Length: 118
Picture 1 (spheres, rainbow, N blue to C red):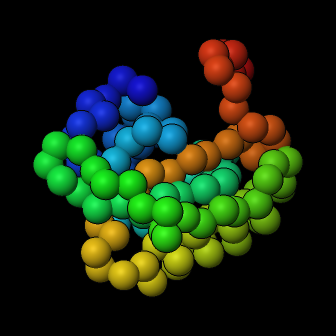
Picture 2: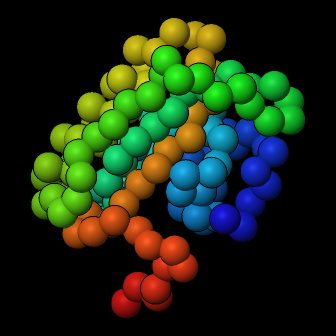
């Protein structure tokens, strides 16, 4: 990730611009928007974790974890999965105000280090 792991991000575009996969702290609204934007960009939301923000940093919560589908999936399936992820984020209790999203490519999981995509 190119961003600051101790910062709370409000802009959903930052997730994609800074490769926030599995580490970026997002506000509830930014996380919902990332879910909505992900499939057309080739990403599947495979997990999100709801946390409590303590500037800086967050308190991880084991009672606010959602697991989605595993790749490979087609675009239509990814759109349904990601829409459900967004809906579930919106239904989380207000105390969970920070979300970390884990994504994969539609066709496969990410690997570290990530090979260049063409």
